[in-house]
Length: 334
Image (cartoon, rainbow, N blue to C red; front, side, top):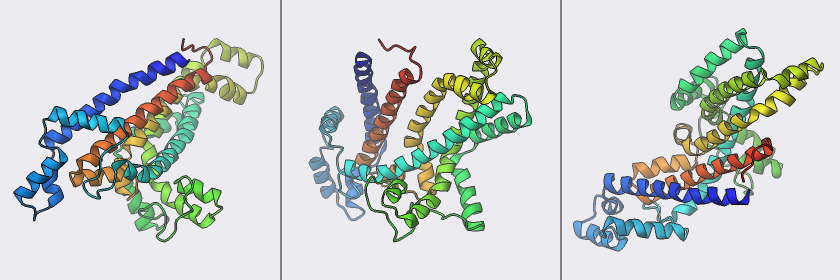
């Protein structure tokens, strides 16, 4: 197990190195001059040239990349050109909001997706099965930003049930413990903040969960159909066990491995793919900060954010792989 873990961690190095190289080249070859962006429209050519020299932008690109990697290894992601604050500090300040949104979305997607998938498999070719699978197909095909806008129009502007944007009501903020407003509100028993945080979370989490929910439902259905046709399921039924025991204790547990794989992959996707959702709902997470950085050609912030998201994605996938052994003891990593 330890050998496998070390091997997987070593495999992360070329992956993150490739991501770093790709992001670095794209930003340096296709973005506008960062020196002129920092100086603004009143900057002179002489000032821009002096700034480029001080920032090392006149060095050959391989020298810049080597310096960039060296800084990364020392935990230095650079400074934002917009705010002059360390990039990593800005990412960590926004990260709890993205984590809270992604966890809420994966919770909704898992509960609804697995439940719908199990019922569809048990009641194959029923009306519920047809309707749920058509709904899953629609969910996979539907653009998240369009769904988010439709939800805002219906639930906020028309019915007035939910707030349009933001993470919590203006002037209200729970005591900072974890940075997750829902959890912090529960820990401090601040029920007004909890109510406001949940109301602000419902629409963005549901919109973000839609695609994952559909994928998990389809995967659960197909995996459950395969498992419930196995001989040991027939044996369990022949013993006279309750159908709920057969389905949830024997069939679902053995069908969980591919489902857990999909859930883990979707969690990684949600952590990095919440950009549009955060933008539509004004959610102050890493994704919305990334959009602001792209619009302002703030390339240290963009490359730092992308590399940070890629790191989170591969670490989540590693954790999912390690969960296999817990779910299925037959899997041996040696």
